[in-house]
Length: 210
Image (cartoon, rainbow, N blue to C red; front, side, top):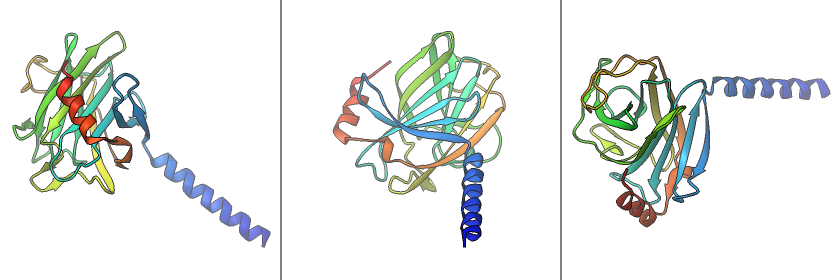
């Protein structure tokens, strides 16, 4: 009896350890102490950007989203896929441009350089660059729903990210070419931590500009 119980416990421990090892990110709820906005925060393993997502608590169908990217200074660009794939969903690609950050709306139907995507538009809420990191926060209209898909706000939502250590060719241009990625990943999480009171969320987007 004891040996059987011990064997079961060892098996469960092994399964849990394998699952944790395969999980290539950590997630948490982050609330900005200054603005009060709360986000689902995703931290991939390694030298990669941190991604923060915020949505209104009444989110359904088409709604505005907020994305914050905090990248090590060594990275040339960082990307985020709203449907969890490089293809057939809105892509947010950001790169440093002097002390600011350029944000480009992209879409790809194949595994080639994504083209400019006009059905998602962005408002830059804040951006900065210092000796260790560059960061940008944007509000997106058109990232929650697209032809063929939408963000799952009631269950598990899948997203993807990518980054490159190489610089883009024209950092001031939203239509610049950018190099192939060095690292990519996906994550699946519920958006409970990302939800904010709808009125406060809308006010934050309306009153913030950077």
